[in-house]
Length: 205
Image 1 (spheres, rainbow, N blue to C red):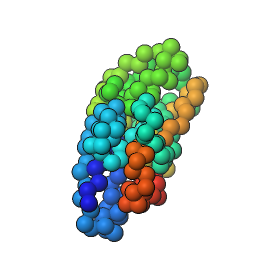
Image 2 (image 1 turned 120 degrees about the horizontal axis):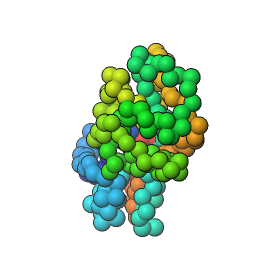
Image 3 (image 1 turned 30 degrees about the horizontal axis):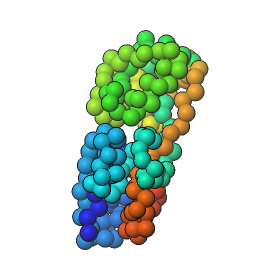
Image 4 (image 1 turned 180 degrees about the horizontal axis):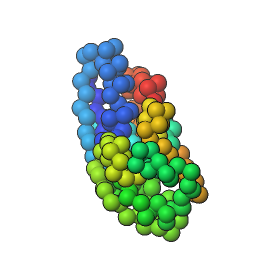
């Protein structure tokens, strides 16, 4: 049997690899086909029965035939290197203040950037990125190198926060939590294999 998966760079890296390895250890005969693209196109493929599951971080409008299952709650924050921005640890930043800093952000086509831009729009700010990068992984590496302030999912940087290599900037506006979802066509919800794999995704998140 083949399981056809779709997702963006960040979710495939952080939400798929561990569960995939454990699932394959149990089901060695299963073949996986993995597609990478923006969420809208992947959901179109799901609707057209070209994919079985899509992992994504935003609820993209689609048909009522698609079911979205939350697998992880995400907490995004502005994060910087203590070595290079440590003097700002006690400051409280507004969005306009943050826009004056060297910002390291994902490119505008990413769901994370769209989420951040919507928050900035509520503060009547259009963000100007000093560095605009294709993936979350590159954003994190640039932040670690002290090149700027990044917008990062803090679920993934516990070690860097605890060892005081990175810190979260304080803001005077709220950054709501969001979720990682698995999207599945309702006609496939009776598949025991797909449901089992979704449970693996939940356990590892």
